[in-house]
Image (cartoon, rainbow, N blue to C red; front, side, top):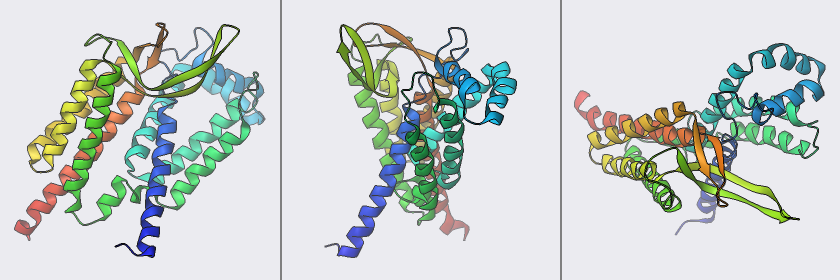
Length: 310
């Protein structure tokens, strides 16, 4: 039986790791509306809407000036920078790799977000949420959150843990793929139309739908789901056979790159309407699985050959 101290430490580790994953999911759920290639500039929506509001209303004059003089004139470049940074934050926080550095970048990214929307004209932004967002990332930095349920912790442990960790990564991939296959069962096998793995709930007032519960994590058609399952299985098998691991890693990396540069999905809502969404969330998850699998496969290989080279 675990003694009380060991149980407390294990609970602490699960809590820290769980909060880090929650932070990764927060970034993941907010990538979809940063839509290339105009990022909302043509219709005045999306990322452009909040950036323009910051240029007009942000509480710090130097920040307003920077948005007007540098960001808005080069808005497409800024949009891509934002999308890449937030995709990387989501993927790296979810797997817990280089977490202290990533947490500091997350805190820094939260500052201009807060300044841009704190005086948003519609008054539906809660200022404290952005202060808490900064504090959350600083806390993840302070406790080295990647050491708990993360890649950082596995890399700091004896090398023989890498095989079991790789098996866990593969299982996560398979589970995501199976759920994706279920939610995409009514979507054509391959194509731009995709179904949401997450939630898009709200309420109706006087016939008008207000969406409030937007946990938009990933999008799937059956082909993407089956590929996710297949590459996850290869990572599981790769815990014993290295070649399978590297094929699974290459597979996840390839679909991450392809889907990221395809830029958009056509998300089929439950009410039958179509919304164009960015593909960064899928890229973040698949790239995270690829990176974790590659790090563990390399470490397992080193562990296997080390006695020979010594």
